[in-house]
Length: 256
Image (tube, rainbow, N blue to C red; front, side):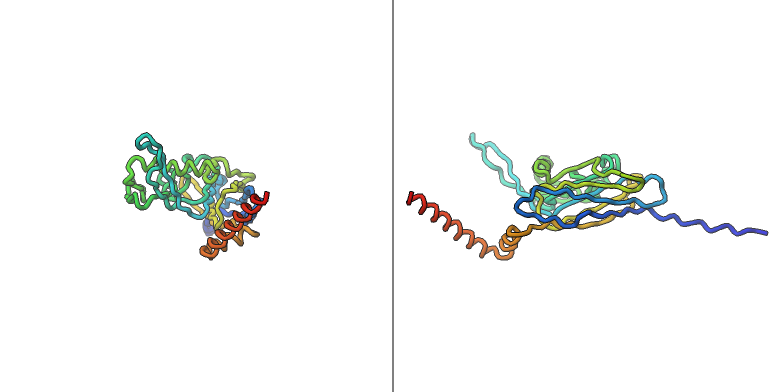
């Protein structure tokens, strides 16, 4: 008698899951930075977990930059270039170097890594498709565009706002991983985006998205909100306070 074969068991596709140990960072006057810890797991039929990349980026901030030029024997600032699309904070942590995880095109399309951030000076550029990569910036600054962009990245890296940690994600057990993100004291306030990406054979196969809020607290938050919601009132009161302090100091020195 013929025996029916059991139907094949469908394999569960590989997936990644992760969570931040804290989703809110409170910035007070004594804030000296923070360390954000992320734990996650890789689920799937394969015994090889693959590669995990953790991207944390802060709110975008325009960057205004100028360079020194020699004019008639004097060193003066050149006409500034304003770059847009630059996150105020950016770090790419991974299980190994990004170039070993995925191809250049994949990293560029996903904006993974400092070299692939879409930092642009809109008034100075146009966007084209070259070498099979979308959104390649072709700037009227010519070859100097890359130098300007490198200067932006260099300044951010110097203050700890941009970083790449090619060993920043570690598997602590089979399928379980841990990442630790250093948030410097200069980190901007606002909503941060955290993307956890699972790669296998150079391709992203699963993504998880998490958010983190960095906000001022106490008197710093009160002044921050006042300055942004009532800029005219804040400016007038600040000017009056400065005049009052100056008058008080001059009065005390006259008495002495």
